[in-house]
Amino acid sequence: MPVVEQNVSLRPYNTFAVEALARYFVPVETAEDIRSVLADPRYGSLPRFVLGGGSNTLFTRDFDGLVLHMTGGSVELVDENDGFYFVRASAGVVWDDFVRKALDNGWYGLENLTAIPGTVGGAAVQNIGAYGVEAAERIVEVECFDPDRRVVRVLSLADCDYGYRTSIFKTAEKDLIVTSVLFALPKVFEPVCSYKELEAVFGDKKPATARELEEAVRAVRARKLPDPAVLPNAGSFFKNPVVTRVKMQRLLEETPSLVSYPLGGARTKLAAGWLIEACGLKGKRRGAAGVYERQALVLVNHGGATGAQIKELADEVAGAVRGRFGVQLEPEPVIL
Ligand SMILES: Cc1cc2nc3c(=O)[nH]c(=O)nc-3n(C[C@H](O)[C@H](O)[C@H](O)COP(=O)(O)OP(=O)(O)OC[C@H]3O[C@@H](n4cnc5c(N)ncnc54)[C@H](O)[C@@H]3O)c2cc1C
Image (cartoon, rainbow, N blue to C red; front, side, top):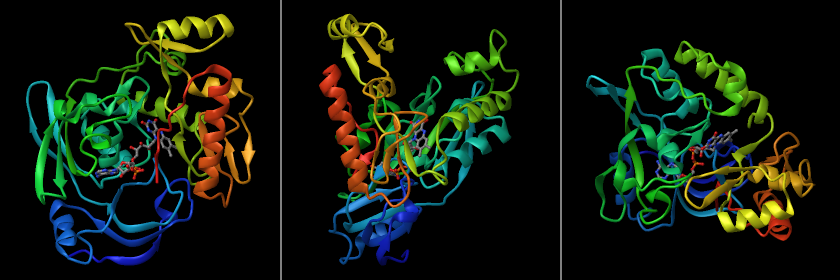
C-alpha cells in the first residue's frame, strides 16, 4: 500500500503556493493504489480530496481528511485506425509532458493545449481549453475508480457530460476518481489558428508543422500569463460569463465598448478580464493577494498571501463586476 503521511504541507502542491495542511496525504498512481488505501479502516471513511497538480485549486483552510495525490503513471499507444492514434494516459501524468510526448510521436491535436499546468486527470475533470481547442474534443473515454462501490468504471465521452470548464466529475459524479484517459489523436495535422493571437502570428499562412504551432502557442502564453514558479497563480480565476441576448443588448446600451463573443443562439460570452479591468481593478492588491497587472483575469500571490486573502480579493472583484454590470462572475478554480 502507498505510504500515508500525516500533517503534510500542501504548499508545494498548489500553484498559488498558499499554505494549508492535509491531515493525511498519500501519493497514488493506479486504481489498485486507491483501493488499498481506502480499504484501510483508518482512511476509508475520511473526507477525501483528489489532488492533481494543484493548478486549479485554492486552499483557504487546512484539510481535515485524506488528500489522494494523483501522480506518475504512463502514456501508451493502445490502438490506431486510418485516422487516429488511440493513446491512454494515466491521470497522474503531467499534462504538458503528455503534450510533448504526443508531438514527438506525431500524435496531433494537442498543440493548442500546450504549456497548461496540471495533470491528465485534472485536464479531464476541468475540460481544459485554450486557443480554440478543448480537451473533450480529443477524449474517447475516461477510466475512474468509484470509491463508494470500490469498483473501476469507464465513462464514455457522452457520459462525461462535458461543457465549458466542466464535466460530470464536477457535478453528478463528484466522488469519482479519474485514473486514466483514452484520447483519439489525429494522424494528420490540422492546425486550429482561428484565435486572434494565433492569426496575428500566422496571418493567412497556416503553420506547416505541429511543432511550429505548438511553439507559437507556448510563446503567446509566456507573454500573457505569469509563470507560477515566479508569481504563483492558478491561471484564469474567473470563467467568462454567458449572458442572454436581451441582457447583452442592455449592457451594450450602457457600455458600447463591451468585449463579447457570440455563442450562436441567444447567448453571448463576455470577456471576464475586460469586465474586471473596466472596474479599475487591474493591478489591485489586497495584502499579498493581487489582480495581475498584465491580465486582470488572473489573481496572483505576490508572496505570503493566504488562500483566504485570495478568496476575499476574488469576492471583491466579483462584487465590483456585479455592481457595475449586473453580471455574476464564477470562479474557475475549485475553492476548498
Ligand atoms: C499559469 C496557468 C495557466 C493555465 N492555463 C489554463 C488554460 O489555458 N486553460 C485551462 O483550461 N486551464 C488553465 N489553467 C488551469 C489548470 O491548469 C487546469 O485546470 C488543469 O487541468 C488543472 O489540473 P490539476 O491536475 O492541476 O488539477 P487540480 O488543481 O489538482 O484539481 C482541480 C480539480 O480537479 C479535481 N481532480 C484533479 N485530478 C483528479 C482526478 N484524477 N480525479 C478526480 N478529480 C480530480 C480536483 O479534486 C479539483 O477539484 C491554468 C493554470 C495556471 C496555473
